[in-house]
Length: 472
Image 1 (cartoon, helix red, strand yellow):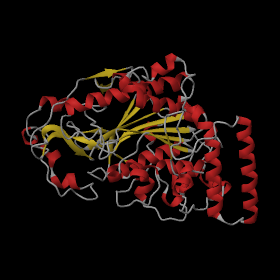
Image 2 (cartoon, helix red, strand yellow):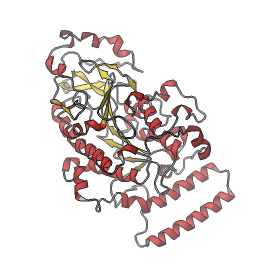
Image 3 (cartoon, rainbow, N blue to C red):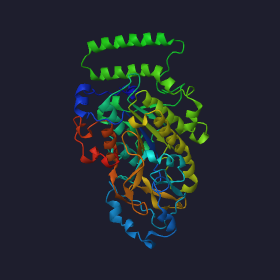
Image 4 (cartoon, rainbow, N blue to C red):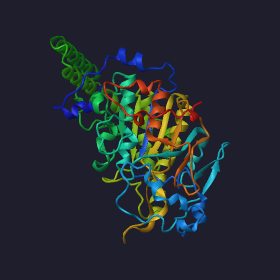
């Protein structure tokens, strides 16, 4: 059931498979998590300045890679090997290695090193698994779509991981969608609605966009009549439901009609349920401060994180958060002025993410809620020189090695899986493609991801492999 079906009123809704057939075939009976909170940083966050510090960059900063012991990292054949479409544009990223823009230190009992730009996340390092051997196939921002589907930007007809979770599990709350999207998604250049879409699974399994605004959380649905009492609204919904049932009797095999009816029913139900979820007035002040809502820089993303907690608390299966929308590649795309632009970006998300982990843990929800933090790729160890506007103050795109984080939901805390080389260039240990992340999420939800093939041929790469090393 997806509200986005309403956004395409002239489109067609595909028939959903029988819930009984799907769940008995796909469920493993070994779910560790009930819900997922999936956070995506738009633009490509530097792994070296976040969760995979590389002091060798500072040691050799200002030198060319040929002047270091690591010149083999720049071998062009090795660089091109993983890319779906090796870049035609030659950018000078080996001319000068760039020192780290911030320090780093060890945190917690695990002693995991985290950048000084993320002190709050460092404080919860013992609750996190650091996946430092991630890689992807796209060296441009189509990788935003790749991160969510496993396919490159031209292959838009493939479901996202959130859609697979929705398709495989169904809802825990009939008044809310299984898959919710918060924040402004990727721009048109980089996947847009396809980054939370459901493709051939049918629109009822795609992400439903909500706003963290109690007065207007459903920007594409007219609000309920303010003059109606809750009882009067319930009576109206009941009548609509009876009329819909009669339509179902008249047209029992019309899958398009049935899917649209369900979407409209959910829209009406959400008009009553969602505004209250987005109203934080009854949250204790200390909880709001935990997410940084008393700080201007944290307010927007902190509100998304608090809303995510409230949504999973009410049974939403998959909540996808976006951060860094700019109308193009994204605000994490630091081709220049990284020392100036990255620190305030980190401040926007650092306390909210740590606050979410603390809050879930205090409520006894972290064990059943899987948190994923990611970005489309990392940044180059070398400074980028392209033209007079991009002249050595930033880092270029880097798909060869980057970091993702996971917490809760049966994942080890205080654990590092995988590694990049001494410069942060290539993933050399525990190499994991993005669909390995998807497979792990679905596995923790109790789904056999290899059985989820609804009449379509999927590539081996689409399935991915469960990252068992990080599981409790």
